[in-house]
Length: 243
Image (cartoon, rainbow, N blue to C red; front, side):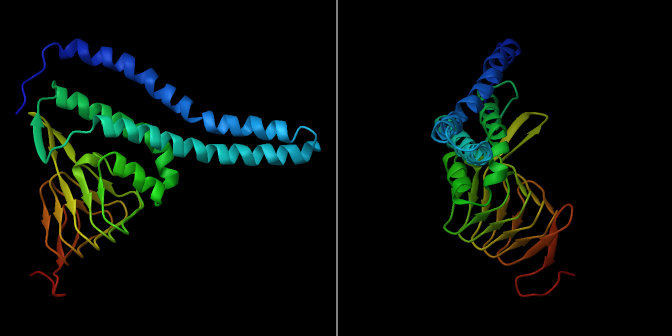
């Protein structure tokens, strides 16, 4: 386990002062393609009737918003590629460089959420998740912006992540931050608003029911259906129910 970082009491507020305006600057930079499009359309339609120009400018604002979403995700994805660690499992005090690094990545993801919620499920969202470190199998459908700690998440081929499902690769306990891989197999279904916690392993073809909560380090065997809070097996792979 990593040692506590000396001077954390003043390092944290200094970094906060630096990082908070940086986030708003990134959002501002992401508007550049949309602003350019708006100005170009304004020039091109200068001689049109007023109602025609208004329609064209309104459409350009909509397309510009889409461009903002894409630019936002790509910029934050690049930052994620530069910052994400490569590890399977780790523990560290809250007052550590690992928690600071995790904090930056968590901030990047929060900055991406306004864009990401409009882009799931899509290949654009999958590209962002991949840039942030999530391993995504072919044909996987991620219909949630709640895949956190992407660098700690693996999603198998043809797996479906339901709307508003939450996948966390971290948690905080008394001794600090804990990071552990979440491994989801192929052809798995994660129901709407289900919650998957760090260290969980879900076998191929398994189903986690809507709103179910998998506690940390839970292992779901292949083909089983789990549900409830905390989640338990409600149907085995052979179709039988547990006693």
